[in-house]
Amino acid sequence: MAARIYLVIIVLGVLGGVGWFGYQYYTSSQNAIRTLTANNAKLETAQKTTLAEFEQYRNKVTKEIEEFKAELVRQQQLNDDLGANLKSVQEANKKIANLLANTDIIKNSLADPNASEERINEKVDEFFRAIGCASGGECLLPPISREGSNSTTNSSGNTGNSSTSN
Image 1 (tube, rainbow, N blue to C red):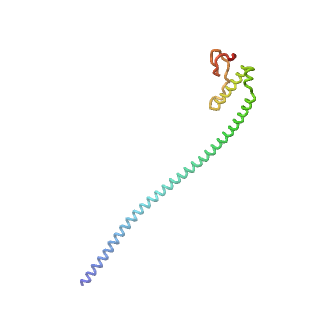
Image 2 (cartoon, rainbow, N blue to C red):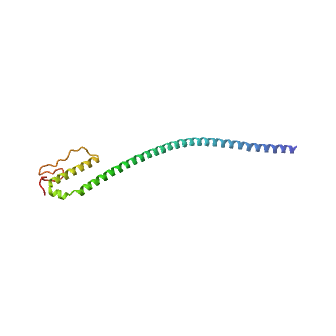
Image 3 (spheres, rainbow, N blue to C red):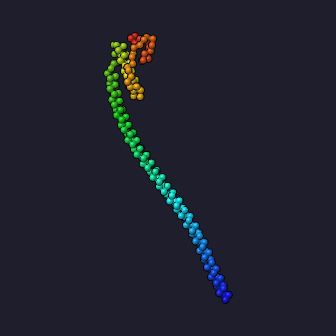
């Protein structure tokens, strides 16, 4: 009989130990499941946020690329315009160089100094008006008068009578 009592105690001890370990396993599994569920919810939220931010970033980058392409097209157009302007200016410079090569300023000045001075002053005034117009100044300026009194400075910066020669 004592053997039966010992056997019942041993069986109850084994069943109690198995029950205890079963309970501990169940509670630790439930805690792990709760933690994993919470972490999964956080990860899903983080993923949705990341996807939304990535989509916004992709849209922003796409927009910037399109703006950059448009800017490149605009810059190329400006470069083409500048090239065309440069070509026309170079041709005008060739014409001026040919005119200057074919003009004997010294001979013309000795023959009629007042006429030469007047023509040079007119061309210089025209040149500065064109520069003023090109740089954003008034484009429709009246021609500058070269007549003035003997005691004042005229618009060319010369003093005295324009009919006298030095």
